[in-house]
Image (cartoon, rainbow over all chains, first blue to last red; front, side, top):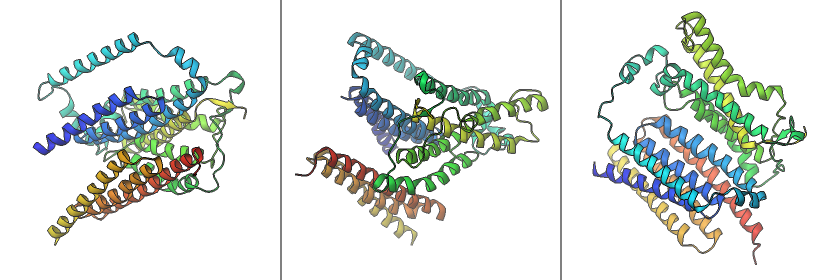
Amino acid sequence: MILDWLLDGMVALLILAAALWTLAAPTPFAAVIGFVGFGLLASLAWVRLAAVDVALTEAAVGAGATGVILLQSAVRLRRGAAEVAAATPGRATTLLAGLLAGGLGLGLALAVLALPATVPGPAAEAAARSAEVGLGNLVAAVLMAYRGLDTLLESIVLVFAVLAVWAMGPDRHWGGIPGPRFARQRDGPLALLARWLPPVGIVIGIHIAWVGADAPGGKFQGGTVLAAMWVLAWGAGLVRPPSVADRRVRLVLVAGPLGFLLAGLLGAVLDGSFLAWPAALGKPLLLLVEAAMTLSVAAALALLVVGPPERRA
Amino acid sequence: MSAALQFLGLLLAAAGAFFFVAGSAGLIRFPDQLSRLHALTKADNLGLGLVALGLLPFAAGVFAALKLLVIWALVLLSGASAAQMVAERVRAAEPPA
């Protein structure tokens, strides 16, 4: 009991310290490193709360993928120091934003503390009936069946995010190759890592997506690992990003949301309501959609890291 | 037998924790980047290895135990590679006198 308190208290203090360090960091690069550390500590906190699915997502998407994207941004922003300085808010705005965020955080904390011990809601019934969906992992069952619309919209948001990044490129590069070009590493640590890690990482990524049905894991976490493997090979110059006009890229990007939508419409036709997961086809259809979503998440995250088109195809 | 193994496991995990503390102290105290990197990789490789070995007797089965070893191997590979990459950049920025 006391040990639990000690451990939780230490994790909470470390999270606060990492957050403060991230805010006070002298350079954007250091701030991003602080942010990644903060995300990993937050995932520890989620493990302590027995929310392993959330912990995996926080570590993979929150700390990992977001960290890499922010790191790319920090490096890109070095070229425009004057513009960054002009766009940086003044002390008063920063202080106001800090007060607002702090007040909101405090309010949320008070609201959570004021919650009754047992929260009325459909949670118990959902848990009792999750087996009907054919998913042993309650979180996956809720995400795919009860909150299917949220998950569908989340997957569509990823496509829009990629479109927004592509739209950042200048007109003359539209339809071109995205991202910087990396020299092919013939030897050295990066070449070694980029050859050794992807075979293992691809298996682990697919495994995480696959076990998500019955254990902590799922398409977002597994897709992030797959994306990371591609980004690693890209950084070592072993693969080149395809042009943003390539139909295959676009197809992989929308395969998940499209499959999700089609499955939802099938539910509307067979069972009378959108996203109903017709009982006869439930599990196989679900797995198909999950597989397509894993691919789309991987493609979207990889393309978000790569950035806008930078040269002609 | 299993109690003895678990006791051994606790000893190994404690030894691993010692390496993490020593590595962290080195990371804070050592004067130059390459020495700090050296301290950090000791904590990563040896510390995590000892903790993983120490947890083996507590693993729920053969596959869980294998998973622990795979995690160690992956951290070894990525940690060592990342450390080499950082060291390369340090060397490129300030060539040895």
